[in-house]
Each structure stands twice: as C-alpha cells, then as structure tokens.
Image (tube, rainbow, N blue to C red; front, top):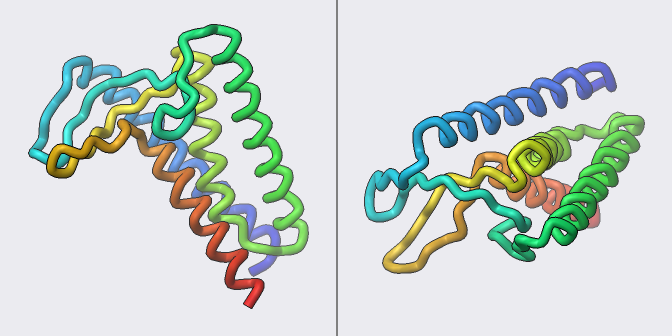
Length: 155
C-alpha cells in the first residue's frame, strides 16, 4: 500500500473512531446522569475520571490533574511522531490512528469537562470493572495491536 492510501485510510479510521467516541460521550451526558442498568453485567453510568485508565492516579488536586493531563498529551505527541516516522517508511499506521483518536478525544474531555467522560460499567458476579468509554477501548485495542505487530516483526 502506498503512502497516500495509508494516510487516507488512517485518517478515515481516526475520524470514525474519534466521532463514535464523541457521539457516545454526548449521549451519555444527555441521557445517563442517573445509572441505567441493562442487565447484571452491563450498565451505563456517567463518571468524570480525573486519572488515567481505570482511574489510576485519580486526583482532585488541580495541579496534579494539570500535570497528569500534560503527561498524557506528551505521550500522545510521542505516539504521533512515532506514527509519522512509520508512515514515512510506508508502514501501515492503523493501530496508531486508533490509539491517537482515543487519546485526543480524552484530552478534549480533560479540557472541556475537567475529567474524562466514562460511562460503560461492566460487572461480573460481584466484580466491578472500572467504568470506561469508547476512547479507552480504542486505546487499549490499538496498543495491543501495536505490541503484537512489533512482536511479529521480531520473529
């Protein structure tokens, strides 16, 4: 695949996953102020996460939140530069596009709402998974794909 096609498809993937996350977050803001239980495993509840994945490093301290947000933005910037160099080598950067779409969307939440909008709650026989969103899913799946592709190259 040539560079132009890689860029085009990477932008399509970025925009599609980004918009899907933004639309679902807006829906959560509009409709799930109170928790909505779907079944024993799935519910929707609006949470503003001031930490990172799974609420790690959550802080109510404004300076701590700012520093954590800057750190997250720097990681996203490093990934963008990494994706750019891979694209220059005509490597497919679809996984990087997915991760970046989630990271950018979550950074927008940090700026607009003072925390990341999380709303998907999953539980399993009393075990409660941390509340998450579509962007978090994109980030996790994209990082796994990047990891697996890099592992495959070493073989």
